[in-house]
Length: 420
Image 1 (cartoon, one colour):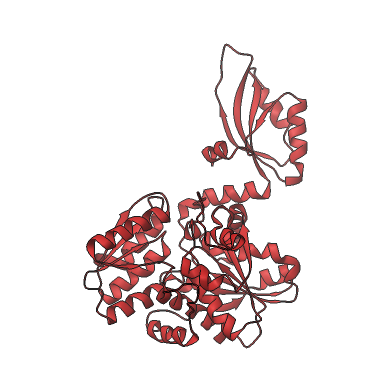
Image 2: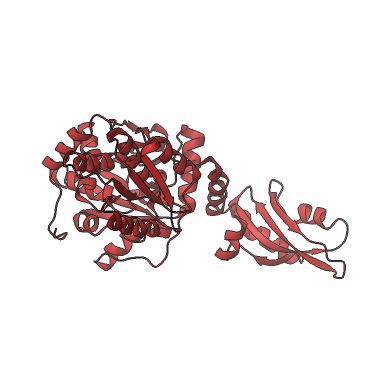
């Protein structure tokens, strides 16, 4: 297959839509009034978190596996690699079609996703945890498929996977008669966005397709800027559903000429968005699921009066991650700060610090101190939550003027990772 000339046809997408209709839901396309008012635009959410596996991945996975099943190619079972959502789609299809499957996942995969994969696949699926990233798991899965002559179900770089994901775009256009000005699409390996551009470039060519990636794993952005598909040397794995070092070659070839812009969103902004959606809209999303909404802020001035669709790609979040999500959101907003503080070893020193350094509504959220009897002062690690981010410079000035300041820890990513 020549990836430079290969394309996904509307006819193929419509056939895929028919093939998966028995298991894939037509998910809502709803305007979110709160977000629309905030941006003075019509912001609609395509709620793929309503799918049986709570993400769009079931579309491509079921289409690919059903096609293999019909062609009699699943007798030796299937193999896949996934950071979580693709695995759930594959597991669901294994159970529906009664196909044996081996699912390779990173050791770092959230427990909730592991449990969901096993729940959907039941006795038809075996999970193998390999490596720290999706790419580690993928390499192991491919080798296993070669050694055992089992079909490998790629999560994004496969024509039938892309055709399945493209049904989402076809569905969006079937759900509205209005011209859509922008579609914000989360990007991991590029399977979804290559399906979206395949449909919109033909049926709604005036719509601008905006790719959205986490800043710590912006492989599509790197590829677009270099003009060729490239592999990142390292990535931040926090947005696990989109943490891919290299987008698919086929995905890149299909989508590169139709992506209007590619936005890399800071992980802290994603966390802030997750908390806002949970607290204000009762919507529970995983980091990758919130990417498209988190990117709206970057386009605020361009969205005025526009018709916008954000693809909500998944809600497979582990409740144990919420503390980290909250922490990252506060760091991003500039209200959470960590310091090494030089404390005099005398009674009342902490009380003076609270009264003379902190603002009236500021709070100490972390404190670690070891008293050294042989010294006049000792260092403490202190985490401070500000009531107003604008008071940061004042806080630092008061600490320095009163002799408490030793060093600021937020600026050191390695130290900060130990604290959060």
